Image 1: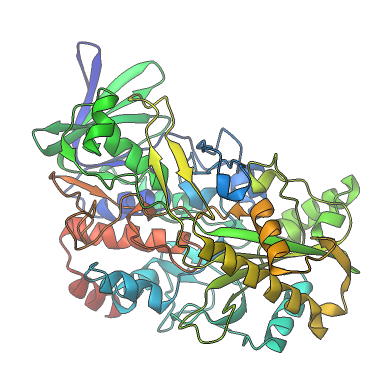
Image 2: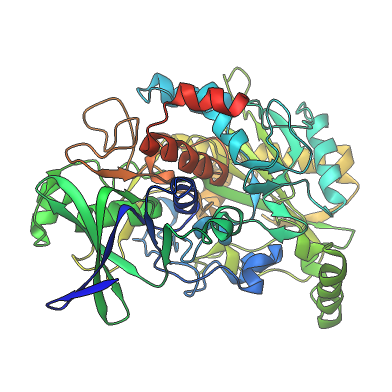
Length: 555
């Protein structure tokens, strides 16, 4: 299988070479390898997703910020949030973000996808994307118009939510936010218990849902612990990938296409290292330009969020951290798959308007039966300090932030991680929205269903007295929500990195299929949509038209 030429080992070629075994990459590898007449190679920089910490839902707290599982992309200091820095996480193992995230399953609203279509992404409206959400899903509640049964990705209701989650829903209802039994049909305006990407109390990442069974196929090769250095071009055609595995340099040739699924930071970085990107930047780094694409690495969007927490008069997860309590939770999980170790941290959510007259919700609220502290030295929210007293937290993020950032190379070699530059509150409209969100959260905590559990203010304390004080609090405590998108945006305009079939403009034989293709950030968490993009991208690659694919799924 290996041919030695000089210092490069050439692996036998494949029809399709996929870089990145994450949320979308595993989907693409699985779907393409369904055709026994083609060969597929999947390249993943990280390792396997079979650790107990990865499979157990509560293990995420030990995964994010852990260099074994997380890329930990560095960022510049952000002057819009008091000069703080954040680690921008990305899953560094099979399954990618779906192997380290909080397992919340939410698709986004009808308006989100219709906005994509209206902005030039032909074929990406909600109704055209819905069949791919349905095809992906194995919903424990059964098949329906909006849910699939028998798909690779397990989706279920929470097994053991904290009782305060119901109080949150009731408090939202008291503030005019209806309780939604199902929020997956395009309308998210209201409050709801979140669905989880779990099966029988275990995390269901795309590594387990899609890739595990596909790896039995003879036409699929999975290479782990292999870092892609650059895409090889013959003229303007992508013809393979050069990578490193330990001290070895390898090359995998692609007879048909190279598919990049390395995420919102990794995908633009790989394109730029390969000569596809802003020409002036690449030339300064000594990288030969294959295609001058100024938008590669631009348009970075992230949900900027802020949280408020209160002391409560009932036990919550952070007040049950004594060794004997942790042992009890662990036993409950092992024996019954219930308790705090089986449930997502974000157990209930709401999509709300901070002011009347808005066409759609402008903030997403997250309820957690625990709390943590964002202080100036906290660069990763998952590693923030948790109090030991009973507390509950509601966080809010801006649905469609106006602020933008970028990803750029620090050097031409893959050993130098790309650098994130973003002013999360660089646009004052986003800060204003979060001020409105904080005041809405205070009203929810003060509503009778929640007020009877609240015993005092914690963060902020004392409560800000003016909008200016709230704005100061927002800038001191704002944080990222782990939903970066947009750095290889698709669109109908010539400046877009990709066309609506996810092909890279200016070259051939090259596509990007992951969350980086989103032209505008969704109004909710992004993982379910990343899986859908993997499904949709696979059909584009296989030559199945969206209309034909939709017909096949209905039959």
